[in-house]
Image (cartoon, rainbow, N blue to C red):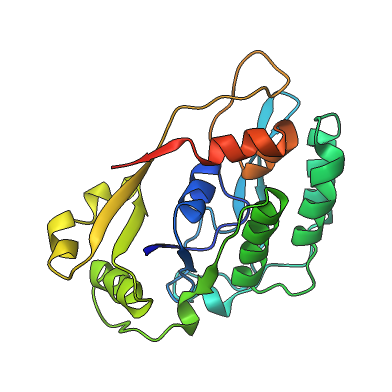
Length: 229
């Protein structure tokens, strides 16, 4: 069984969704400290040819507070309207926008809940099963160093294969995981491009962009455009 662990991000880029879709259990790492200027509460969209950043306020956010302790502000009307303005002419706007709006305006503002709901919404729309768990609700040794915590989470779920994003190659060693009976692999996204209604392709945008411009079938194909190394 494969497991991956990542901090909860709000409508992150395609590669994050690829990681979620590549495993049997995906753990939202919400019992670690909040990262400012990261992707927990912000990402980028394409607005009439210009890359625009959206950022949902997190009252009381601090690198000294855990993600599970924080909530998104309910003041998201301008962000939702900005998404409407950016994608109103995209081919799948009518199917996707109401779903995106529902996530952004969820009355339960807990960060992990909203980010998890965004993931569930996308995979439900694409008719792909997904199992999400919260690290804060798992029983494992939180006093271990970073790599060992990931191993502890993996073993607590009865899994023997841990997947990480490609950036983890400089942080985690296969031999160390193997010593604890766990196979370590990294997800390497393939180069992709899709029609964004303009000549030049803008990569690494929020998954919202993929859904607005791609059919569900095309989006499913993009989800599978990766290799495990």
